[in-house]
Amino acid sequence: MGETVSSKVYESAASAVADIKDGASLAVGGFGLCGIPDALIEALVESTATDLEVFSNNCGVDNQGLGILLGQGRIRRVTASYVGENKEFARQYLAGELEVELTPQGTLAERLRAGGAGIPGFYTPAGVGSPISDGGMPWRYAPDGSVAIESPPKETRVFGGKRYVLEEGITADFALVHAELGDTDGNLVFNKTAMNFNPLAAMAGKIAIAQVERLVEPGEIDPGSVHLPGVFVKRIVHTGPQDKKIEKRTVATEGAK
Image (cartoon, rainbow, N blue to C red):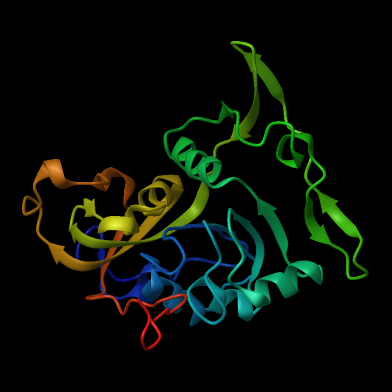
C-alpha cells in the first residue's frame, strides 16, 4: 500500500498503483481515448507489473493509453468490444502473443455492471446464433496461424419464445478510472462521454482507483449529482486537468462545405 494523506486519497498515481503485481486483472474505464485513466496507466507503465489481464471497451491506440502497456508486451489477455485502432494489437493477436475475447459492447457493459452488483450471470439476446453463443471464436492463435484456444459454447435458454445466451459478470482485481470531479470520500462525477465504461469498470474492480481532475471535500458535491457513490471507490488521486487526446483528427479541407 502506498502512503496516504487520508483513508482514500493518495499522494501520487504511482503510490496508488504500487501494489498492482504480475498477473493482476484490471477493469479500465473510458471509450477510445475519451475519459481514459491516462495518469494511472502511465504510472503502471513505470512499474514492473506484467502478464496483465484487461477488461476494457478497447485497448487504447498505438503508443497511447493501454496501447503503451500492450506495446511493451505486458498484457496477456484482453476482453474488449472494439480493437480496430491498434495495429500492434492486431499483430500480437494474429501472431499468437495475445489472448483476445471479443464481446458485444452492450454485453461488456452489462457484464461489468453485473459483476459490480454481485450478479454472477444474466441472459441476453445479443450474439445468439453467432459464434458468441455457439463458440469457436479464436481467443488465441498459435504461431503457425492455427487456433490454439477457441471460445466455448455458452448456455442458451428460451424466454417468451425467444432464445437468450447466458453471459457471466466480470470482476477484476483492480479498476482504473477517470472522473472530472471527486471528493475525498470517493464520490465521483464524470463529464459527458467519459461516463462510458468508467462507472461500470469502477463497480467491477475489487479495488477501484480513480484519478480526478478536481478534488473537493465531502459535502461539496450535490448528492443528486453523484454518478458513482464512494462505496465503490477505494483510492483517489488528484491529477489535475487532463491532456485530452484525439484518436483521428479530421479537419475540413479548404473550400469544403
